[in-house]
Length: 459
Ligand code: EPZ
Image (cartoon, rainbow, N blue to C red; front, side, top):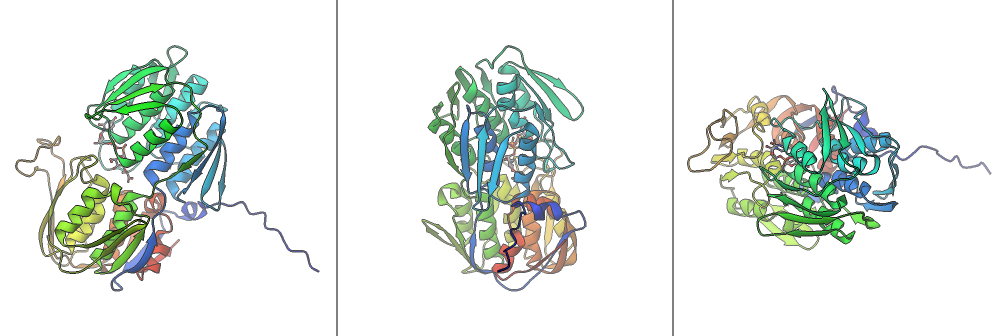
C-alpha cells in the first residue's frame, strides 16, 4: 500500500491577504438583488485590542475564539511575533496565546503595513519590561488622527515619552505605573481602550473621565472584570478602575462584527434583495436599525441574526454621526450607498472624522445621474466640533444615482465595502486598493458571490 503523503504545510489563514498587491483588483457589476444567508465574522475592532489586553495578564494561557481571518489580525500578530509572544492559530478560528514576559521591547511594524493598535501594546510591554519602543500608529487616512489623548494619559500614569520620527521611546519613570485621573477631551475609542488596559494593571484607583462606551470597549470591560479587575462606570461615562496584577480568563469570545453586519443589511436593501445576516445582534445596532426603519426598510430581528429585506421605495434621510450609542461613523460609508438609491435628498453630517468622504468623490466619477455634494459648512442648529473649520464633513446625496463604468480606488477600509456595494449596483467597475478591504472583511468576495453578486477577485 502506498503511504499517504502528509502535508506539512502550516495553516496560514492570512495567505490571501499577503498575496494581494497594489495591482490586484475586484471587478463588480449589477447582477440583480442579493438573496441568501451570510455569516458575520468576529469583530475587527474588538479582537486585536482584546488580544493586547490579554497580554497584560499574569503568566498563563488564553484561548480566543471566533477570530476573523482578516489582514488586521495578520498585522497585529506580526507585532506579537516580534515581541516573542508564543501563539498558535487553529483552523477552528481559535487563537491560543501563552501569556508570559516579552523577549524584547520592540513594537515595530516590519513592513509598510501598520495599524492603530501598536500604541495599545505600550501598557503590557512597559508593565513587563519597563520600556517599550513603539511604531507610531498607522491606519486609515480619514482625518488627522492625533494621538495626544494617549500621550497625555501615558504621562499621567508615569510614563516618560521620547518622540522619534516614526516611533515613540517609552520608559517608566518609577518602577511601576502610578494611578491616574484622566479626562479625555473627546470620548476616543482607542484612548479609552489604551488607558483602560494600563489602569487594569495599575495598583490603586484610576479614573478615565469622558470615556467611550462602544460595545467593543464594554466587552473589554467585561473580560477584565471577569479576570478580577474592578471597573465601575458612572452615568457620565467615567470609568473607575481598581487595578493590579490579574490573570486573564482562560477563554475569550469575540463578538460579531457590527459594522460588517450592518453593511450586509445595506447590500440587501440597496439591491432590493433579502439577506439573513447570521449573528447580527440587535443590541449593538439599535440606532442604525431605527434609521433604516425610518427609511421604510424591512427588518426582522431573531435571536441568531437579523433579516434585512426590501419592501417598498426607501425614503431619503438626514443622519449625523456620533459616538456610541449614536449613529456610528463607520456606518456612514455603507449607508451612503443606500441613500444614493433613494429618490430625493439625503444628508450625512460626519462629526467624528474630519475627512471621511473621499470615497464619495470617487463615486461621483462614475455617477451618470443624480448629484453628490460634499460641503464644509455644518447644517444649521447642529452643534459640531468641526464648526468653523474648513473640513469637507457634510455630504448631500440627491438620488437616485445611476452608477456607470470606471476604475475606483479604495481610500480607507470602510470605504472599501461602500465601493464594492456601489460596484454591484453599477454597469461594471474595477476596484483597486483592495488590500485595505481585506484588512477588515473576511472572504468578502466569496460571501458576495454566495448571495448572487457578480464580483471577481483578480490577484
Ligand atoms: C476607532 O478608531 C476605530 N478603529 C475606527 O474604525 C472608528 O471609526 C473610530 O474608533 C470611531 O468609532 C479601531 O478600533 C482600530 P477615536 P480610533 O480615537 O480609536 C480624535 C475602522 O475602519 N482623537 O475614537 O482611532 C480623532 O482624531 C476604523 O474600523 C484625537 O484628537 O478613533 C477623531 O477625530 C476606522 N486625539 C476622534 O478623536 C487622540 O489622541 C475619534 O477617534 C485620539 C483621538
